[in-house]
Length: 90
Image 1 (tube, rainbow, N blue to C red):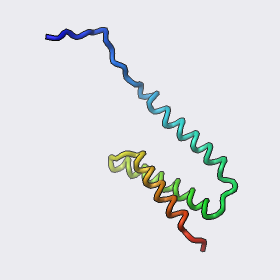
Image 2: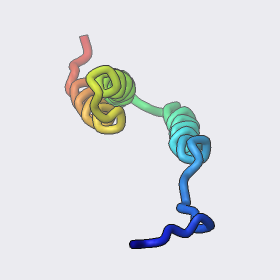
Image 3: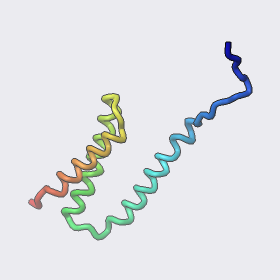
Image 4: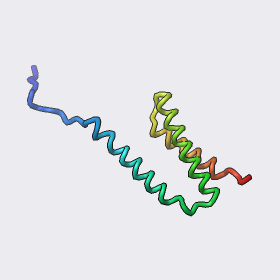
């Protein structure tokens, strides 16, 4: 028979602290992206906007389907950036 120790506590993460890091990272990435977009040509602008739209769509689909929002955002962002970069001027 094993005795349990009522004073032994397991470390658990607070839901607030575990969700704060990704939010801070997102804010930092947005700040860097916003400051670095002033000198882009049309192809680079299409790649950037395609990547952003693809990442948002991929994250949304990942959440809706019960998968990973992060993985969806990575795949969607990469696909959107590629399509945006390959589009020709009209």
